Amino acid sequence: MIVSQLDLPDKAIAILESKGVRTLYPTQALAIKAGVLEGANVVLSSPTASGKTLVAVLAIIKHVLEGKGISLYLTPLRALAAEKYEELRSLGESLGFKVALTTGDYDSSDPWLENYDVIVTTNEKADSLVRHRAPWIKRVSLLVVDEVHLLGLDRRGPVLEMLIARLKRLKRDVQVLALSATIRNIDDIASWLNAKSVVSDWRPVKLKEGVYYDGAIYFDSGEVRNIEDSGDPITSLTLDGLREGGQVLIFVSTRSRSLRLARRLAPKVYGILKKGERGALTEASHSLLRIEKNIVVEKLADLVSMGVGFHHAGLSYNVRRFIEEAFRKNLLKVIVATPTLAAGVNLPARRVILADYRRFNVEVGRYELIPVMEYKQMAGRAGRPQYDKYGEAILVAKTADEFELLMEEYVNSLPERIISRLASEPMLRGQLLASIASGFVESRDGVFEVMRDTLFAAQFSLESITSLLDEALDFLIKEGLVESYDSYL
Image: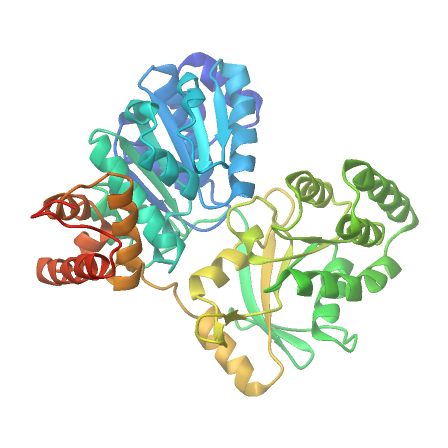
């Protein structure tokens, strides 16, 4: 399908074509055929880098230029919100619509947003805006939910689920476009949102997943590739990826580990750089220090001069953006990052190395395996469209048993089913308390009415929902967090 065939104003088509968007990816074409430009609710599930964002952009253009109302774009992270804002702001300048970004100050309804056509924000900020009864909410005609599979996360999932439920309740005719990584039970999400499900396994660059063990990479296809042993698996995989002309993205579990590993790799990476590359990196290092100067950035600048960077949420937006751009321009050869970089920020690399697959859970006091969904998100960053014929995502095993575990639990596994976290009474209590405290519900009947719009209600029996709601409300009342007068709260 070509862009000129779309039901969009000629000016919009001309702008898209001028940006190089002439032919739709298969994933995008499927969403168009499902009616996303005709107002249909759609849940689009496909691999990373398969073009989901453009589907949202096309729907936004349709709504804004036809004067249907405000388009609200939800993202899980500030970094992702900033990236989407920049994309949409540039388009808005060309097509004459205004785009706003709001991610902070959870104690304001941000009335200034009333004057914007597109609002990009985080799930938590949007939740705050809804609970503060921002007057412009009732003008929202399109709701884009990016990374909707995060509904399955323990802490953030309930916030997103209740946010969507409240928005559906406030604006029954809002069009919902939910974008997701590959998930097993997309039909559950689609049924809940009264949406059409669009599923595609297409991606622009072939992905090869594998495990490194004892000097070789064992890929899911059966291919085995021996690599030069540098004494350390991560170093060996990194240098091998660079020698083959690619860039390397390494995911680790903590900020401190990102710095330690980047420092360990930097001298080795610098040793294989060309003279011209070294000079450009020295200039890049100086440029970074002109943006910001503190102890952390000085350490980062030293590493940048050797072709390596680290990336995590503790860095300022401008510094993170600098690192991302330096990598996109192929100045930086290696980035060591925490998993936040995998959640939507468009920064692909030829080779992705997953150095950590366990994360410490403070609540239970032990290390736990990361979800398959998270692994697939990180693995999906492998392969640069228009540059690479393939991408590689590699886990690292130290023993034969660990090799079998990684192959079975990650490489050859499907992502988990998305199950509402409101089925956990502690999670349910927190969301009920927030709804009552904000005045969104004022009675037991009101609680049940709001909960009818949740994924929780779509996935569980009425009997189990009623029982859990009664237990959660009784707990809040008993603890003095909520007062009850007859049926009112």
